[in-house]
Length: 105
Image (cartoon, rainbow, N blue to C red; front, side, top):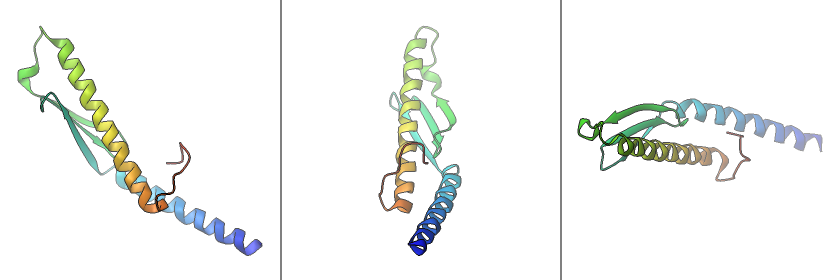
């Protein structure tokens, strides 16, 4: 029984090391999303941090700030969704598709 426990502990440590490596790599990978036909483009990294926001000057109008705000929110939300999908895909490579409880990654 003790040998099995030791094997499980080694596997858990290996998985933890691999997950840490993936987390580090996710900080270097980026995803991009746009809204309004490319009028607002947001780039996020694999950790879901927003790296940049680009706004087409044609969409900047003091008369329609609400539309610009909506486009920014839409692009940010889509970029975070894509970053989360990237993270889940990378994590599945290590876990073999086995889901982990929320907060484990």
